[in-house]
Image (cartoon, rainbow, N blue to C red; front, side, top):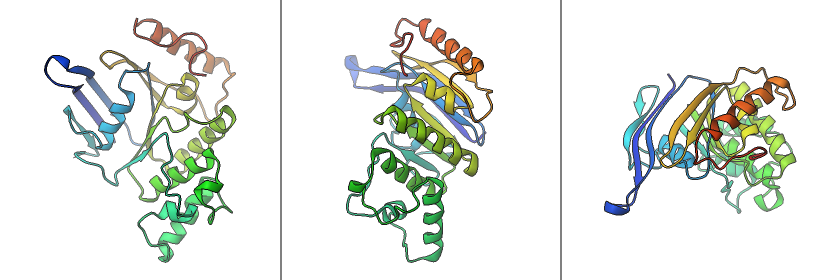
Amino acid sequence: MSVLIQVKEKAFGIADKRTVVLDDIHLDINDGEFLTIIGPSGCGKSTLLKIAAGLDTEYRGSVNIHGREVKKPGISQGFIFQEHRLFPWLTVEQNIAADLNLRDPNVKAKVQELIDIVRLTGNEKAYPAELSGGMSQRVAIARALLREPEVLLLDEPFGALDAFTRKHLQDVLVDIWQRKKITMILVTHDIDESIYLGTQLAILRAKPGRLQKWLPIELPFPRNRTDTSFQYLRQKVLEEFEKTEHSDYSEGAGI
């Protein structure tokens, strides 16, 4: 296994005001898989991702990447937030390089390779204020990939984007995943996105967050949302949400 996430319990608060957010979560993700995690609001999706990244260590359980326990943030876990969090005073290439020296020919070459992969060639000297939201998010993805993480964790990275830009970046992300063969775990509230991107799909239920269903997505790439097989899987996911009274989803949700 590439990533093993075991959360016996994650809670917020103390004493009688203590709320259990995640309970008995166990995820085994193989090398090179693209796991998408979906669930209603309040099911602990983002909290689970932060635990996997080592950003939240106040829980009972463990996270292991290739047998090494994750106890803090590190280069093995790349993390993409919903907001791009770029430095406004740095150019695209400087944001990607971050604390690495662009004068180093090896760093420069790697940065340029990633700029090409995320389809930003020609924008190397642009500043964040000159970029669209989608372009800024591509810079954030390239920055996370520069350090060659073993797993890339994405917390609703396209949630704030318009539908057209979102679709474009989904295709960019699939292209990166296929090129780099990196294990990816993406949290989303969008059913179509979870099926379009994932090779495995984890459905969480809420209060507390538990794994309700694990579905393999055995559709070839590139995928077509109007395809019968795609729509069949979409219906299966919707049926899973209907099994829990805590679901926020109904027909047409998350599109």
